Image (cartoon, rainbow over all chains, first blue to last red; front, side, top):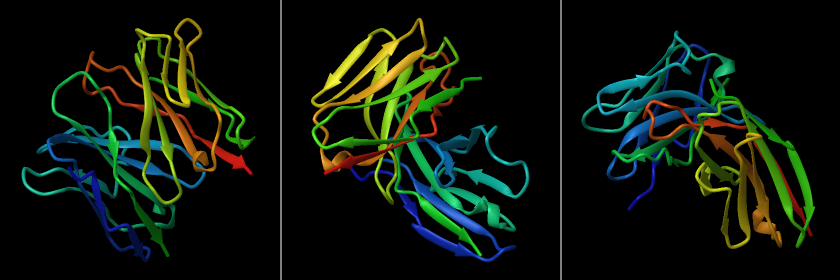
Length: 115
Length: 115
């Protein structure tokens, strides 16, 4: 059973370009969470999605950031017109359907560098 | 909302000695407390968790304690080894009441095991 997969692992963009980060959850998981981690900081929640639904986007900036988790395919975190402050590691986590547990399994992350 | 404080931010321990990382939380409704280990260049990995119906849980060299009254929980690593060097994150959430409840992370503790 493959773990959570993220790609690309490293992404370099110039200011003003778009960044697309992909996350494939573990098999059987339909809940996806995106986090941002700045250097020397903890994980900041951004958005929680289920298939075709955004459940909670309270941690995501209102502008330039969007996320989706379509019926088919990976979850996508999209950052438009990137700025230097967007440079960070972005982690995706997934959790299984149903149950009471919030146990989340993390992917290896995408490290975004904005030049 | 929930707020999780973690101390210390950096901890250096002689190999073979014990390491203790402490966290406090603010929301008395929180009932699930996972600990994650993040190695350099990787995503966080769940190493142990505790739920509010128990006060202590142990898994080989790792143990967690929970004091619900004081809203404290701690990670204890005994007989530390070089491979224990990593960043450790505590977290808190309310699972079961509402699947929309987020996991809130502390800022992390960078643990160095000295030879």
